Image (cartoon, rainbow, N blue to C red; front, side, top):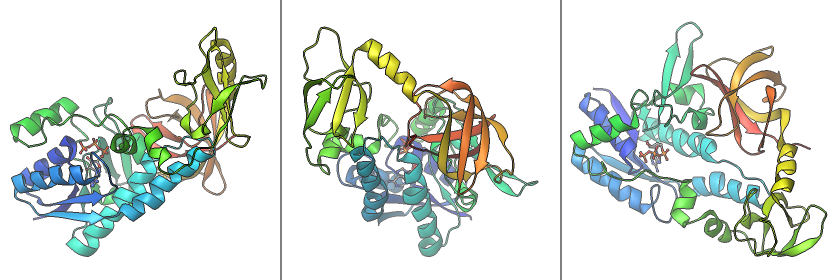
Length: 358
Ligand SMILES: Nc1ncnc2c1ncn2[C@@H]1O[C@H](COP(=O)(O)OP(=O)(O)OP(=O)(O)O)[C@@H](O)[C@H]1O
């Protein structure tokens, strides 16, 4: 019987992944990574729900305390990004360095298994011709998580199973109900795990960043009010600025170097947004997934945010794991710190992190 270690967060998706594999005759071991303190999945609450699923399926449950790995790789990374006015997206890094890496290592070393499974919505296919594991979008496009998985190595992809990749979320809920799983009716997580477990991004950041008062200014530099730290603001924010003005004001820029929050009316906002609009950008820490790094430019479709529409692009390989993306049409709000992931149809070709432009 093939042994597989299933990553259990205590949510419905991973519960169904474990139940399906168990039902198919796999020797399933549940593994929960203890990532942080607080409320919700990845915390003690998630461990209890995961344990209850293992009890129900009659399978062993392991808990691995890697709070220090999560702190060093995700919390510190996020906090340092916010402190310099960028909004990093930690999920792809979390998948690679916090979830899949440690899970595969633990499964191999401690549990004698070469296979792990998760409740991610994505698909993996082995290509006989190139000898590479390919990462594909999920059948349920609305749930597709391939964007967050672009950074997985060939070794990690080759060791992973995504039992939900061909299901729609409604199928998952139906299967959970059919199996009578205790997590069947658990609501979806709506936000970044750190936001859910701390109540808000502000509450999370306040634990790590001291208040740093400064000026709120308009686009001409005129001081309109005071703020208590640029990390408390996001671009586009309208509420909570504490400034009385004839027209609604929006945050249009965060200048961490000079400790200023720059605000403007909707017209200033519209003008300013075109600043992040460009026909190209560079990307670093690139991982080539379904194909080896090409020697010459390739055509693809790229997503520069999780929910953005894929748009046509030319991907030009550069040295040191970087690429230049040249969009067919200029793109709005290209955001340094977010992932750019390029596809050919359903196939993830590669991805990386958008660099700060000068
Ligand atoms: N703390 C954890 N320990 C082990 N595996 C985890 C953990 N958190 C997430 N995973 C795995 O990663 C998958 C995707 O996690 P994500 O945070 O996106 O949650 P999700 O899509 O809401 O899934 P679920 O409903 O299982 O929580 C989960 O289905 C699970 O297999």
